[in-house]
Length: 184
Image (cartoon, rainbow, N blue to C red; front, side, top):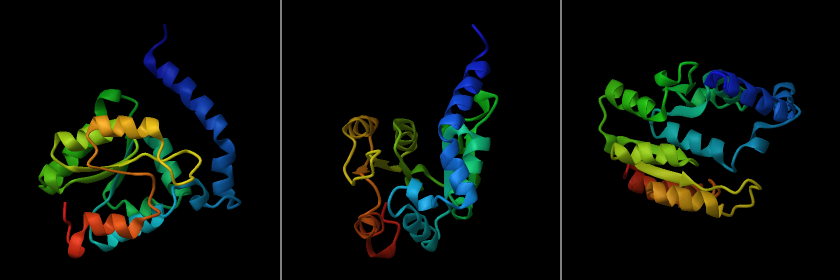
């Protein structure tokens, strides 16, 4: 067997080839970022920033790809707390480490953490520190329904709220921020 990094490089090579047309379309402007994002994602990011929240993006994908994708999707400006991804040395990165760093650096308690994600890891990590986890059980066809497999995994991980996407943004924000406050 090869070192784990060799297999990860093979995976990334295959993945980048598979999504090459998307990346090239975004870079050339022939594909809009919204075509690849869940409905109203940008509206959510803007609403959270308008409420004064500091936003962080953490992904298990290698950081160089996460940073590039955030730029191509034109969302980097919303993440004033930074964009984080996996490192070559896997011991240097985990979503749990990013969360702990945010809480420590900002002097926050876990109850002040609000996360959005479609993976069980970020939900579990958020719940472990006492935060509020919104599980996004989106269907890949973006029809507005929930993917049942994601739904069951996010429920098992302890998500506080499950949504299919951000189409009902006003209701979501009203729930999360009653009377304009943080409410979580």
